Length: 173
Image (tube, rainbow, N blue to C red):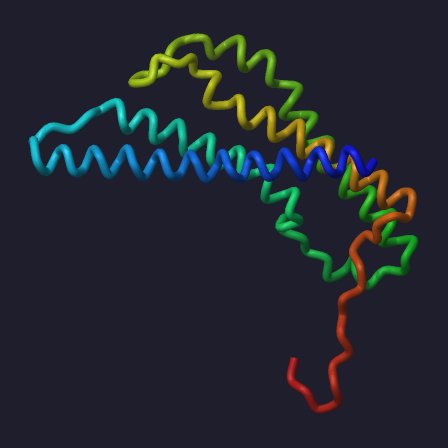
């Protein structure tokens, strides 16, 4: 499990770098386009298509990084107040729901990719290149949830830890 955890962390670092690169290329292309248009009164239409593609890639690569860094939205007001067994069951259930959602996304991938063979305007790349990072990220998020499920089930990680600090008498919440 440590090897999988380390592998997922390495992929998250790589994806973070790739998402940052996408942002840098988008900024550079658009800065070039704006400057060129200001000086020569001509703009390149293909830059918008590449900006759109890079933006999609940045978001979908960042999706896994966001989940891996445990920055997902967690509303644990009820779960953190449960006894340890309830938190464990709830945590494993949450992981199963996450895996089910990722499996649903991955299940549709082959059919979607087979339908998206036409080239995109402005890039010439097949349309499926827009959704490819989604499927890669979904597979990695599935592995992330699977690892969390195993860690919670075996007691290596606590689900919904109690971080509730007692309120001092007379303090305002």
